[in-house]
Amino acid sequence: MSEIQEKANYCLSCPKPRCESGCPTTNHIRDFIHDIKLDHLEDAAHTLYSVNPFPEFTSRLCDTARQCRGNCVRGIRGEPVHINFIERYISDHVKRDDDVKESNGRKIAIVGAGISSLACARSLALDGYRVEIFEKEEKIGGAIYTGIPAYRFDKVHLENLYKEMLSIGVIFHFGVTVGKDVTIDNLLFRFDRVLVAIGAQVENTFGLEAEEGCVAGLSLLYDLNVLGKKAEYKKKYKKAVVWGGGNVAMDCARSLIRIMDDVSIIYRRGLKEMPAAVDEIESAQKEGVKILFLNNIKELKKDDKGKVTGVKAVKMELGEPDESGRASFHEVENSEYELDVDLVVPAIGQKVDLEFIKPGLAKGSDGHKLNQDRLYFSGDCFLGPKTVAHCIKDGKDVALEIMSSFSA
Ligand SMILES: Cc1cc2nc3c(=O)[nH]c(=O)nc-3n(C[C@H](O)[C@H](O)[C@H](O)COP(=O)(O)OP(=O)(O)OC[C@H]3O[C@@H](n4cnc5c(N)ncnc54)[C@H](O)[C@@H]3O)c2cc1C
Ligand code: SF4
Image 1 (cartoon, protein in one colour):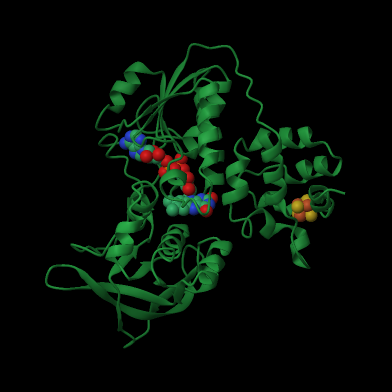
Image 2 (cartoon, rainbow, N blue to C red):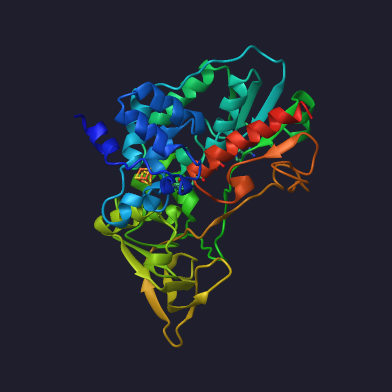
């Protein structure tokens, strides 16, 4: 028996599959695994792709320990089913069905070429819409391209997807910043509908700024992944601290430990509360990143030229759950201390900036509508910073809304 069938046969084909309730796309996991048990690979692919068009991304990037695998009934007494392995196998072996319907003459513009935009563009293009994407970078992928490091995700999947999007007729305009090079009103004049899918890219820094030695998380990852500044950072900095506990913080710390010896993460809550993927936390620790749980940064220490020399930090303790359901936290009295570092990386969340696209733009009356006729938004800029799987689903959802708006 092949390895893939062995893994599939381990699934119990539960009448009420708990794994599916943990999947942000609510994929028919039990059914595609069942097709694999029967050696019906094409059917498995059809089932998988019908819900999630981009499993080559989710099978490699989802936090499965908190999503499908984390909910698998097999996990109660032992190892959960290797759902992501099966998903990856299917997507590596069977191509997506790319049947494009005849043109319906309708034109859609999308701002941004992140995963949510691509999911929406694919649904629309297959249904006969003419889709043009306006992207400020020179490549597709958004946060997956600029943020997620290559050691964690092979960017060849983005290149392959780009070729495939071209083959189904999607048109890309790279190096165009909407709100600067072209206005939303101009796009609304030229297209029937416009989708804004610009992600959540404005970084919180909570006032941490310096002339040198303080670089926010997304900017650091952009420097390393897109601008190729690894050598520059290696030369300039010897000891870094990353502030935060999410995926961005992990990617920053794991990227930095590859170019310097001393990297710590300061996180104000405990391991249980840490939002980063479990595998990422473990990998960071294995690679030598020190994680200072229940600690927080209060302010930067700088020399007279404004260059970072360290941080003033404080110990924290947990209290009752807050409105998010996570344990609240507060400072331990008289526990302040100083940490000498030459690079501080705040990675403590991102916000959405629709004002840049057009002043006054905000959520509209219902669904994915913005407060201007024929204008929609999706992905992280609609949901707030989420995950690849959430954004794929959201891109498909907004495509349906756009399609139905023509028959309304
Ligand atoms: C470092 C990092 C690590 C992550 N790790 C994971 C992970 O392991 N697993 C997971 O599931 N999720 C992860 N996420 C979250 C996930 O990547 C995002 O939720 C998702 O990719 C967002 O997709 P999006 O399409 O909404 O927006 P984005 O991917 O942010 O894409 C928005 C696009 O819009 C473009 N744009 C912005 N403004 C303009 C403008 N004015 N004009 C033209 N173009 C514009 C941007 O250049 C970008 O290409 C991570 C995020 C980051 C930042
Ligand atoms: S919960 Fe686990 S065992 Fe049950 S159907 Fe899903 S993958 Fe299979």
